[in-house]
Length: 96
Length: 292
Image (tube, rainbow over all chains, first blue to last red):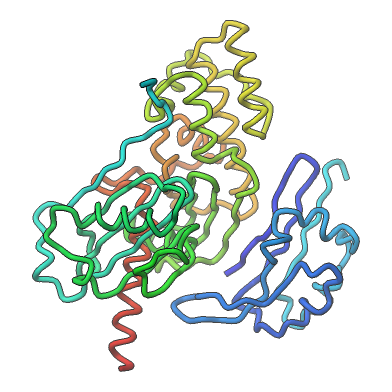
């Protein structure tokens, strides 16, 4: 499944979307993130426990600020680090 | 004592004609939300009884209260239940649960039980958050998005307006539909500001139903935005307390251009999560028995 972490507000849309089917919990994106936005966590998916990357509770509601330093309009470090293309970063500012 | 307009009635229900003593597997799902706690009992994977209670300041107490209410009058004891799954915001605090499972999976599974395998998009509109869920024919989640950053589109938002206008919460929806012409939605996406805006409209002489219409319309728009991201695919269903607010439901259907599946009699939309949890409980119980 694809989990979209983040939100849309008056200034734009800010989402980190992780595909838990593709993610194998390798943790490369976690290491690549300079802000500590990501972590790996065990989740119950289809009655099985699986280790996958997630956005931390601390950053989930403020990724607009947490992710800004990476200028995610391009391809931020987390996306580049993922060999399975399991992570997508959406960064759309209103008016741009 | 002054009437509390935001307070909805707590209640319980037993499905008539069912006998739990003949069941092979008895499971329960306890969904402790931020505003309401629901306990659902299923026998051999079919709905037996449930309760819907207000969540108090203590999650474990709320879970206990909901469970006690659900078994009330059935002759069943907690020990008779083979497996309990806790879900919801307070799922780690259900003291008698065997396992906790996120409510995303539980709502999808519950919606699949209530409406069947055609459900593909689900909107859970709860007390303090809104979840947009895509699922497959088995009720497995394929995409998920949650707004818990603000109260717009949630039950709390509704409670604020019900309180402001002194209208019982269950009347908010029907009253909002009594307008001849649909007014502009309140412009704020923030419930705090929407409330101030509502006060302003009342002062301008707007009748209550118009203020409610404007408010419900703004809520519907906010919810539609969430659905935009995961794309609505038919069939579309709504669970959670706001499913009972026809003012928001109708306007949401209008915006997205798709009708929601009608509510099923005997299934309060607030218990979808609990149903899903109880079904997972059955699957996990049987899995454990197999590998034992």
